[in-house]
Length: 144
Image: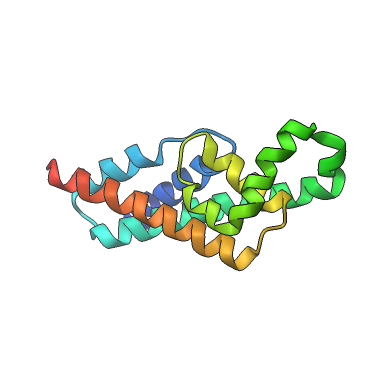
């Protein structure tokens, strides 16, 4: 495999892993690749966004799977159900904030558990991730 493809695959993998329950540093990988300057900024943003979105959708799917094994009524107290109801109120658009550290993974998991609209969830996750990586990439480029 060509070295250029491997570096993009590394960015994709870092972004994917960063968006699952495992911690990662995809922003640092993106900033480093921007600083090298051998790939178009838009390509780097696209690869990171797609990887991170697919990782978030994996977490969403895990939430959906968990819901079949652990219904809300059996797992959560009344107090915690109030929080779930807040996510229900905002629906898939709550996943615009899936890019937030710590909270974002929980939002994606809850989105799957609550069986929020997959289409809305995908759009919201994609938009949130794209904005974050665009900011990171352009901020990194301005430092060069």
